[in-house]
Amino acid sequence: MSVKELRETSALQYGEEVETTREKEDLIFLVEDEETENVEVNHSLLCRVLGMKSVNPQAFTGMMKNLWCPAKGIEATQITRNSFLFQFNSGRDVRKVMTAGPWFFERQLVLLQELTGDEQLSQIHLYKAPFWVRIYDVPWKARTEQNVLPICKKVGECVEFEEDGVRGSGTFIRARIRVNVEKPWPTKS
Image (cartoon, rainbow, N blue to C red; front, side, top):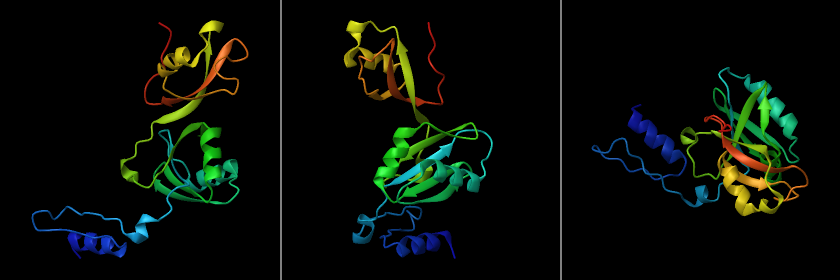
């Protein structure tokens, strides 16, 4: 079977329309139909274990399932060497996992991204992780969202402030910031 026939066969098995010509042999146009429009892809997380060493897939998925304790169940599939797809049966379980991080496995950071269904897994590059960061020495009168957000943006994307708000209750403000883990952390000048 040729590559062209294989592509057409596999695409048609999923109810997708295929358009190919001799000049455009490599082009395949995918069209959503009634069946694929309503496919549930929410409640899915793509995970990447950040690190050079390969992880044991059974150990990783088993540990994450135990740590996350989903109320309504979870399925795991290995995508690549250190990438996994977790499909939850409840959106509440996904939100719990996303807000409770960052997560680690054998001292390696686990990066997570919630999927919408429009992504190609091979094209997703996971490189951000949320961390709680303390911001010290902000004068009391300057503790406003307007003043603190630019400070947070020096490190990454601000996700939220602690429950006490920007005012905080002590000598620092806590902010949850999504950080690009591929860049070095900013240091004092």
